[in-house]
Image 1 (cartoon, rainbow, N blue to C red):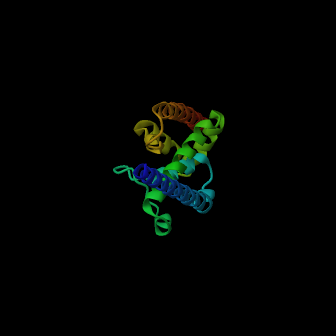
Image 2 (cartoon, rainbow, N blue to C red):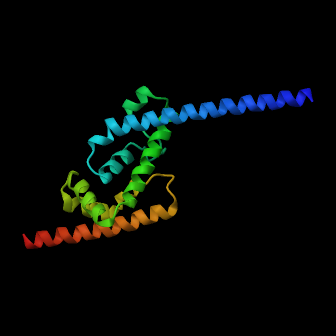
Image 3 (cartoon, rainbow, N blue to C red):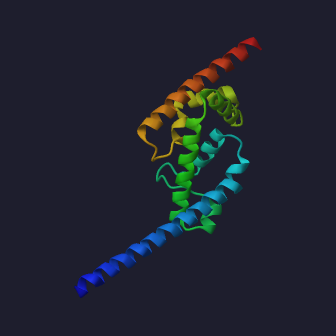
Length: 168
């Protein structure tokens, strides 16, 4: 009976230590998310612009996020988890937004890009550039919904842009 009590005690201590480590990691990730949200994302107008920005931090070859400011302050793995979480949350917020508001937000985002709206729209439609905006871990059905929405929104914006050019 004495040897099993020692094993149970070790399991209990190990479980407690693991639990404390997990809680500490969650607190650190929350600090990183707050830091990133308040210092970086707050200055970016619109959900599509935020989604575009956070997707631009991800290396397409490795899937890892790069952010010099956060990397200087936090451990790499904690930063990766926090930025992955932010990316997923922004992506979900975009999908939860009514399409009419998504259209206006997307238009505002694309208008701020170099090349002018007609050129950017053409490129995004032709190359499906919006695919890089999706978080890697997003479920397939959400990725399909996002791509379907973007194709429709880009078509609408392209039509509006064509009508404005022919009227003006």
